[in-house]
Amino acid sequence: MEPAIAPIPCDEVLRHLLAGCGLPVADLAEPMERSFFGVHDADRLVAAVGLEWHGRSAQLRSLAVDPGWRRHGFARRLVGHAENAARERGLGTLHLLTTTAAGFFTALGWSEAGRATAPEGIRASAQFRGLCPSTATFMARNLSGG
Ligand SMILES: CC(C)(COP(=O)(O)OP(=O)(O)OC[C@H]1O[C@@H](n2cnc3c(N)ncnc32)[C@H](O)[C@@H]1OP(=O)(O)O)[C@@H](O)C(=O)NCCC(=O)NCCS
Image (cartoon, rainbow, N blue to C red; front, side, top):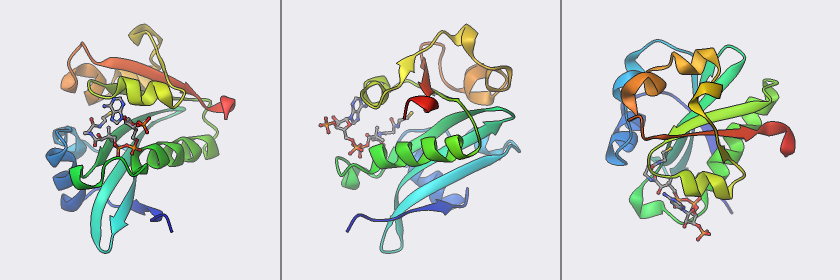
């Protein structure tokens, strides 16, 4: 049976997983509406994904799988789960920035997008403003495409 995906808090356990996977955690201290979902092995958090809500738009972030648990399809399932959560809020498009996994997202139906097309709330986010280098790929996913 596939491990369940469940909402998780933005706590030290999550930050430890993200930092161990080389992802930013500093900006998580900024107050903002975020949702996180995770996969556990027994009691251990082994994979996670986050959504930052910016009004009528949202940014997927913090996709991380513990190195010992990669290639089990957790990341793919977590992205699908996050996409559904955004769809349920009535969003038509989801965005993200990545320096490491553009190919992974392209395989899931995401496309590279010009940074100038970023909705205002996302453009103001810490990740967009500078946490990720300007070489990061900005991507969009049309949620009405299934
Ligand atoms: C990227 C990451 C989440 C993928 O986790 P995973 O458990 O390997 O993913 P899944 O098992 O769901 O999917 C595996 C598939 O994605 C591909 N893939 C994994 N990482 C990839 C990457 N960085 N670029 C392109 N493709 C990638 C694999 O080749 C595999 O494809 P296949 O099934 O056709 O062989 C994981 O490597 C990770 O945590 N990396 C460090 C953090 C990071 O870079 N996160 C993304 C930030 S936006």
